[in-house]
Image (cartoon, rainbow, N blue to C red; front, side, top):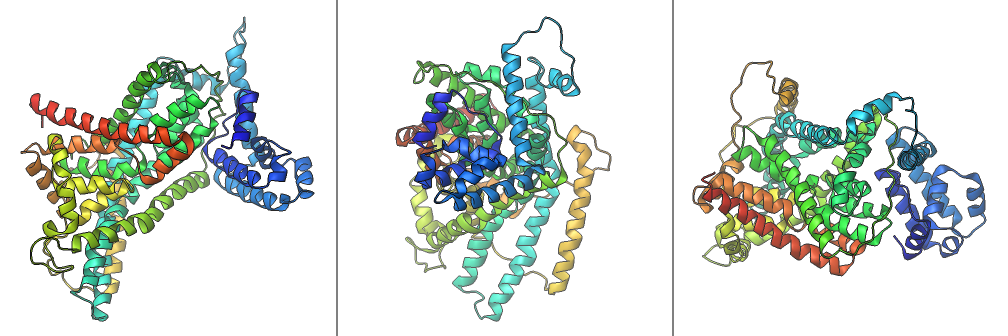
Length: 579
């Protein structure tokens, strides 16, 4: 937020939060307004952005007469079209809902009635959902159901995607390279061991992301997430914050970057900084594939419980740190006033849910084809470069490569945590680029030495047929698993899922590096991934929103805390005889 806008919001004393999507468009329009200095000098940027989204005709007429007004109005039309596609309703209606929700919250805070009001259906639901004692358990149950759906129901589709990538897609690429006379060359190794192993290792988890975003979209569109912030208001006060600070944290479960930008809705600067420091402890969607991978390998009977526990640990860590920071570095922080907005309950539309789910999942896929592909290629090159032994480029033992040698120097620092192998340390190092890369790195370093078995030759149409039939089978398995969310099995027990070669290699590596305490080491590894520094894009957002000083405070602090918590998990577990 620009200095002009900060001064405006602080002078007014508050700014209403119009929801994640609307706030993103407001910020985008503010940036467009500030580029037109003649417009910014006449109107406060946030106020103007909101009035334009509402379709104020007088403002639109005034802008047409100003230089740069036409460009701004064109940007407004795009923002309105985007929001109407998401909400399935007029933007001015959405803004009015949030505004009158704020007014309703203000009345609840300031007015006391001698006689009870007539309760609406929404009020009756809120009496239970936002109850001071029942509210938090209801929120935790809702989150548990979300993670149960995410891990258990999406599992058949994970196997399907893995089979498609490691089977037909790999075979097609190898066949094409064979026709070009490149089979057995370094080019084939680049595609199979580099791009497919790296990018494919992440794309396997696309079904997980889709189910996660589906569940969150339903909760958001129904209006429940605003109630969750209301419920957490009392807890936030312990941190010296208020319920509004919980909204960026909720966004952080999807991605840390927009969550950091969402702190702009907080008027008090110290509130923004404190909230921004706590946001990275919310497990973003990029960490979920790591949890799923290790949960499936070491805790197959309770993978969803492990995932839920890690998300809960992130929240608890943020709460404890918030209390500590509020009592020390932010001791003299002035308390800001806050009125909670409770928008009306809405029946989520299929169009809105699909758009939310697809928008976020497609962002995850775009990362796979850009950041993760680039990282995978760089990793393959480093693993193809020999620095020890007698190997040559793309024909060397991976342990003699430049990548392994560099990470072996880091591994001893992680020895007390139970995973002092170069494979584990390399995954954590590349995780600085993006947390999805942790899985893709493991897919490369643990499969690069695999001995390929000669597959039975199949035609293109046979492969396509197998893809379709296996998808139908995965859908059937998903339907069968729906009752399992509530612990009910309506179907006969089937065979247990077999671990893939990657999973077996990871399990063997962690068992060896931990001295036989693989489960404890894997838990310590997941805790480290949960706590340590977020991705490079999030770090850049921290610098932009919080400043360089707080960015470095966050980076160093999270690295130190991650090592300490992982140490406690592993060494404490051994002392207690666990794992």
